[in-house]
Image 1: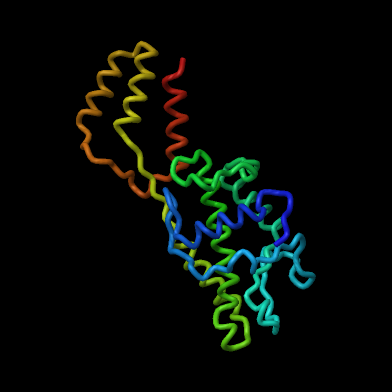
Image 2 (image 1 turned 90 degrees about the vertical axis):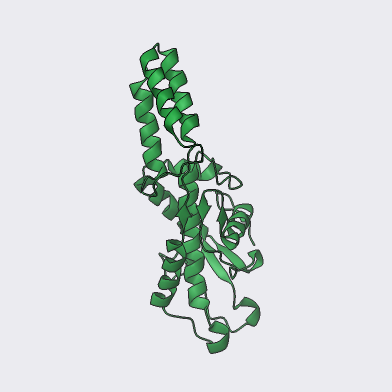
Length: 224
């Protein structure tokens, strides 16, 4: 496998494969993908094939058994696709160059990591869909079949958003106290005392992005 400049190098792809095979960890969970190719079966390409200039990845029906499981990744195109999606989500595309994939729990760049993992899960599952039953039939499965396999894998992604409400309320009370808003501090502690002792899970419809927006709004509200 060729090493290259850019975010998606050999070590990052290896880390992504490990996460996808295991079914995720921390706040990001999905159906495990045990049939993903080993690192040696991933061929790095810097440009797409001439007959498919928009390809992010591709497989071939190579008669050589040693190459029948290869998946070709067009890494510059994949990186551009991921960064385009980040822009759509209001994220800084430069974040892609400095991700820590060992922390999928309290990582401040978790939204970027989710886009990266879901994109790579889609790509690998799509190409594996093409390869499904290839050794038995000698033919690659259709584009429609491959896309259904990819969609099924991506649909299994679950982002677990949990927050320690009492801890967050305590932080808010501290900020209010520093601002001299003592009446509000008492209200916050009163609310905190009414919460159940067990951990509270946020409704699934509340996304991480919504929490970030809420936090910024609170900072504006209580900053003089």
